[in-house]
Length: 204
Image 1 (cartoon, rainbow, N blue to C red):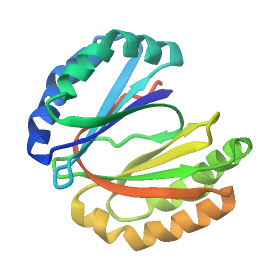
Image 2: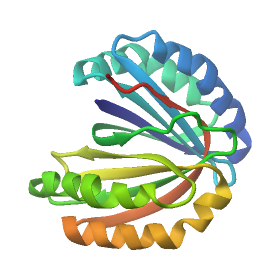
Image 3: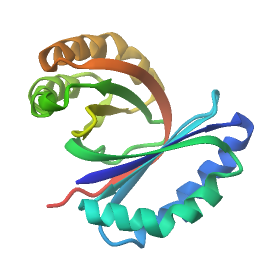
């Protein structure tokens, strides 16, 4: 599967209305596109950050949807966004959350790696990190997204609520230390978001 992410920053006072529009009209527009598999919407209301991830069967569907919806997407986020970054990813490892309840939170880790080490990173996350993450109380799903050509990756992890996310920080740091050493990865940033919505339908 393949993913497109949009990361926008702006005035925190204007974030709520744009997030609501993306969760309703934005989700509807995406769901009408061939190859659509799901969407995640995440916000930092205090700092004024918003991230959307849309999931697709293949690269062609992802690209076609971007071409169709690019103009409307820009219109929808314009009241809030002062900076917008669009990225495209391969979903190398995916364990989407099921039945998330209101109050869920999300941690995003951005990483860099040598492109030649892409398979090494996927193996480390799939075989080392993910099994250990599943044993952390409150963890309900996660994914590794990579860009093999540029050597960039993100790890996203869902927690049942904010307290579970906070409580997980030390345990996750230990998992991250082991996995990044195994895969020769550099961690660039760690962010935490409130989950507005998250639903991905994996292919059977």
